[in-house]
Length: 295
Image 1 (cartoon, rainbow, N blue to C red):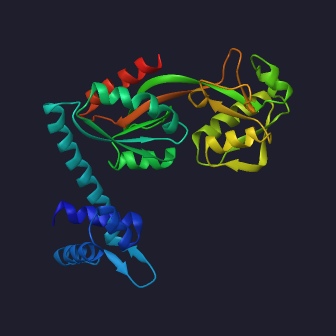
Image 2 (image 1 turned 135 degrees about the vertical axis):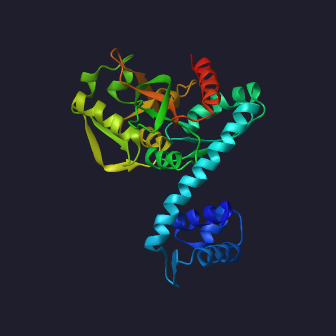
C-alpha cells in the first residue's frame, strides 16, 4: 500500500468514474485501475463495484476511503511543517475563492503578492462556499477567501475587510437620479438575485426583506456579471458588492451604481484555514498585504 494508491481511491470515490479519476490524478485509466486492483488484492477485499453502467464504492470501500482521507491530510500537514521551517513564504498554496469575490479581488492583489513573495506559487480555485468548505476540510485546499462568518470548530478565520453593497439600477429610472439610497427606497421594489448556492444570495435577501423589497422569481443569475447585464438591459435592479463596481464610468453607461446611506448594508470578507495549520504565518502575511492594498 502506498500514498498514490490512496489518492487514486479517493479520486474514484469522488468522481465515481475511472476515466475522470485518472485525468484528475494525471495518469492513464489502465494505470489507475491496475493500482486499485493491486490495492484490493493486498487488502483482500473489494473496495469498488465495477460494471459497464456505473462505478460505486462497497461498504468497506467507503470506510477505507474515509481513513485514506485522514492519512492524506496528515501527510500534507507533515509537508507543511517542513515548508514552514524552511521559508513560510515559499512553495505552493492551494487557494479557494467564491465567485462573487475572485474576479474582482484577484486582479488587485495578485501583482503585489507576486512582488512581495516571488517564491510563493498560488493555485487559484473558484467554487461555491459549500464546495470550498468541503475541499478545505479534506485538505484539497489550504486557504479560502470568502464571506464570513463560518461556524466551525475545525477552522480558523482572519478578517480582511468589510465590503459595502451598492444598488445597480438602469440609468433611465427615477432611482438612478439619487446620490445615495436609503433602505426605504427599496420598499416594494423587485430585485434580481443570484441562484441558490451563492452566499451573496442570502445576504442580498436579508437586505431585501429588511427593506420591504421582493425577489424577481422569474430569473436567477449564475454570476454577478449576468446580473449586471440584466440591469444594463433595463430589466431590473440588483445589489452588487463594492469590489464589483467599476472605478471609471462613462456618461453613456446604461447602469447607475448608487451607494447606500448609513447604516450601509455590507458583508465581511476574510480568510479561512484549518485550525492548527503550520502555515499560519504564511496566511497572516498574505492577509496583511491584502489589507494594505484595500485600505
